[in-house]
Image (cartoon, rainbow, N blue to C red):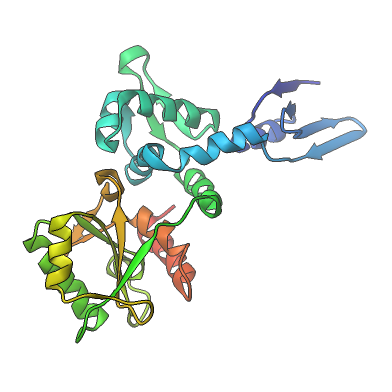
Length: 271
């Protein structure tokens, strides 16, 4: 019988091998053997070193590459073009593409400098990101209360004030999801990422926002780099985080946020 032995075999690779009744064994202890009179199937997670490598994919500049591939999953990318779109170095883009090929999530065409890749398994990549969320430290929220404002009116007001001050921002969580794919009758809070600095502080001051520990209707997530605002979209004059980012943020939320996340994925993301 045929048997493949490897340090690591992707989930997609394992499924294909089982379908073809080819045995396999990897360094994590996963084993599949199908022969006359014998059937063995043991599925185990990859070794810790590989698990750590996988976790690193979903943070920092690596995550920017994944984010770009997911949003533009129908496009083919050369390494240089992907690096420019994701705002990372060509070396980083190349490294991430190599890692993703190990999971059998990419299709490729061409050779050498003209080689291009395409994300053929966007759902598998997004599902893998979701599984890593518990191991990724959540962003810190600064909570504010803006008086005499409903969440709906506050969203428009925030957009106007931030634009007037040239603040780079992206609305996320429920307020953004409601714009992309309405689900709730109303939302009680506006959450957004923005690049901190004197200009942003002046804009928050103009809103009349005061810091609170409870009863907040505005929450600010301080972005550490422009890459955290990557792929935002302007919808009705308001800058929203990409549907992918909004989906991931909602999965960390409370109340009906997870329901809203699945509705957004089904209606707007589509995979």
